[in-house]
Length: 186
Image (tube, rainbow, N blue to C red):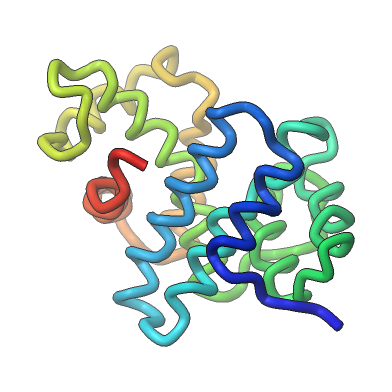
């Protein structure tokens, strides 16, 4: 029988396969960002969206070359419901050979914000405040244009995610900054 884990169970599952503080923190941040967006787009599913955010990179630390492929196996090992498997693994659509295409708005937001949270976080730590609380769109846009800054955060994926959602890039960045303000300090 498959399950939809609680937030606490999702965190435990993430930590079962990830030991590096960065990966655990990233899961928490993306989970919190997804909860923020769920309040607007699916208030009845906040915990589900957050769990998907927490678990989206479950396989990245152990299997970076099989990302979003091995994740299916790891989630199945833990009897995780297929809806979560599809949602979490769809964030790699077009980047890795996952058959899971983002179709639901939650999956599209996860796809769009995963890379963007990394970029915004990198901009924030360069600021005197080291915070997203006073971070503005123009600061992110300035660093966004510098392809050498946070080079591991794919601008192409971020732009593709905004297009999937039918949002302008500025709207996606602004909303993600606001979402990250709610989870700062995790």
